[in-house]
Length: 190
Image (tube, rainbow, N blue to C red; front, side, top):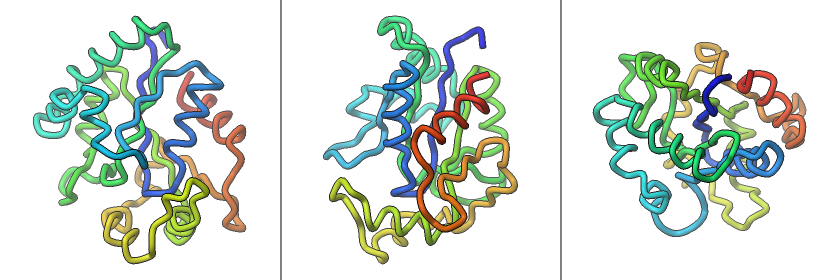
């Protein structure tokens, strides 16, 4: 890859976006920008990327965000950047009406400027259970998870198989972080 990679991590609450982002930062030297997380305040504003994020979502133009993140990668000396997105950001068909979504046409624009999306996913029951049983104490209730993740019920992983990593084993246990980093590296950093 000629340019430093910029990768958005998408997925429902509790699926492990922050954990994988932290692991990629530690193991692969990537800059981890947290747009979502348990800390108070809005991650987009905390990262000082509000204008660029709004341009991506509203004008469907990924270039300002990609340009600013690449500047930060260069200044910091990181190998690339991974951005953990809020659970409300979902990849969806172009005509599907979701609150925040990266449509196929926007995904193509993002890819053309060197930005990829990776969706961490698995059976919704496993995702919800993982969020409810978070070790960091930020677990949620079934009701609050359902209220905060409605668009994931419409997500069709088979339609976006080129960007999906299943984070669960067949028995519902979470895959190991080393295994996820290895798959991420093999599929998305080539």
